[in-house]
Image 1: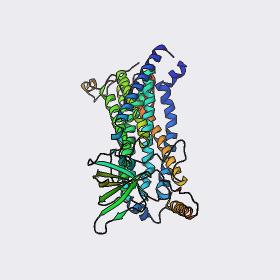
Image 2: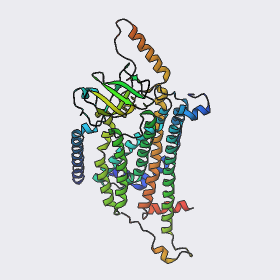
Image 3: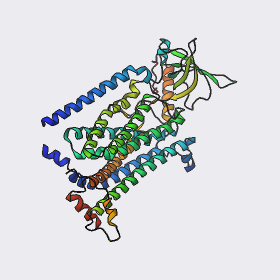
Length: 158
Length: 75
Length: 247
């Protein structure tokens, strides 16, 4: 290559490396702010501030959703399969809200380890499938769970 | 076919407005982009032709001709 | 080596190639895109969780995919502009930047309309959505900078530097869903794994992505030809070409 072009290429590469390093350091330093929500494990470990508006996200634990019969109040546990946090919310839930589905809740931790949410958003995963396939998968998973000595592994894609 | 009838297809189980808004905006913007690109091309060709015209046409005043934008060439 | 490069960078040579390619690109692109969309809208099964709202994916993913691909192509062209000073590379960058901006806007818009019924919100400042918004502003910046500097050579270099600096945003968009907690789910299409949807969903999606790619190719050829005609107006071949069109 022509020496002038070689020089230009070196300058451009230096520019790119410099910008990448700057951006990498910035995003690394700000990673806690870039994360949209805290996991239940982070909250359990005390990483989430108390009485500050934060978001908490995870999976709605099966069998923990309790609706108040007189109001829109609902309580459920959000889990990341390591620890879980109790969420309290009053309002209309998104259509996709269900046990075993992902959620991101906005609100604050009260002193007793409860998360009081004022907004709940549904988070879904990247798996798409026709309803019949999902039913078949769930049936298969149920059968396997009923069998003695079955592993607890779930075949539905969470 | 995933739908029983045409009205079911339009309604999309209540998600119709969302789905159809997306498709409408997609085709509208891609159409506008194409139309604008074709128009730009016609305008550039017309401009080049005007510049190449050997003599200005009779109804064109000389003053108007001096204001036509001349793009610099890099050759 | 220099000879091939010289030929590749020759506007006249490109103009001819583009003219032969364009009808094929348009016909094949429109056919693929329409097949993908009709298949996705009418024949693909609904999703077990989202029902029919997921059908937005058949334009959301192609738009978002192209928005990022176009920027990567622009970055390669910017590198060529800076190192080899090839005129055609700058023609590409200035010609396709508005197309990239429209595609990015479409990705954001369709994402917002999809987000409302599924997530429960139009917009959230998560890493994926925010980095995509930055991409839109990068496209706007490239267009504005190109228009602001009248001298063609300085304009080309300034734009190329901006495009190259902005390219660090692309891996951030791509990996945002893996590096940080986001509301946006990870990618459905991965290069190394099977797509996380059945064939009757991913085949139409793949068709519409390919179709939009070809349509973009057609638009890029068309717009590059326009820029070449405007810039090379003094050369003999352009004069002859314009003359020939008259008749």
